[in-house]
Amino acid sequence: MIRSMVEELKRTIQVLHIDICTEEDRVRIFDKADPLYSVLARTLTSRRDNLIITVADLEKRLYTTTPISEAAS
Image (cartoon, rainbow, N blue to C red; front, side, top):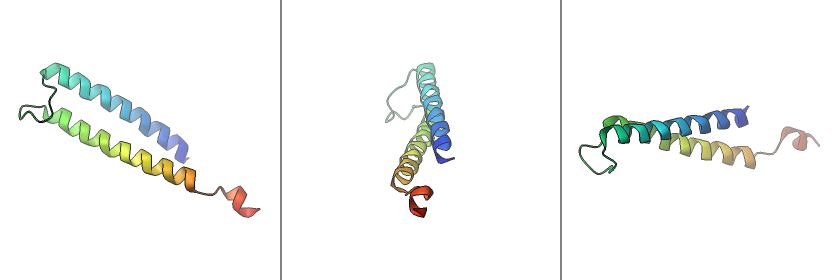
């Protein structure tokens, strides 16, 4: 279940990355420090970055948790 959630989140991260690039191309501003940088791109970037952290945490839990079958042995 966690593995499928991680895979779905990774796909969402890819879609967000594409959306960010598309928005930057649309407004022709790529510098995040520029005051005219797109609010949409900034919001999508924040969401993507939060999902990247979430995926890293889930993967860490997934690989550090002892499987139930091993614990029962």
